[in-house]
Length: 89
Image 1 (cartoon, helix red, strand yellow):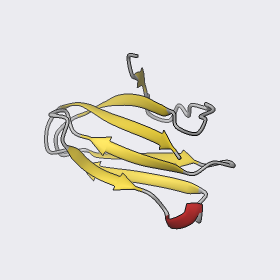
Image 2: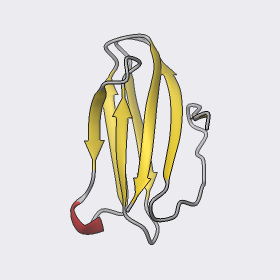
Image 3: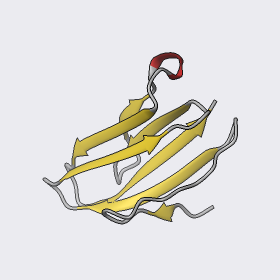
């Protein structure tokens, strides 16, 4: 499915089940800072951030679900659409 577009300061609330992956995208200009925060409620997730060239920038997975929030961030090296993947255990 097509990734859902994220917009600055517009939180999205969604449910995810074990084994599912949800994908989002947002546009960033080179040199700008981007951060995405995922709040976990009763499920443990892995959050991955990918650059426009599909290379993994950063992945966050708190040990044993000990964090109630997973956060990924970067300073964009290139203009373009960055992608977030949220995978539920």
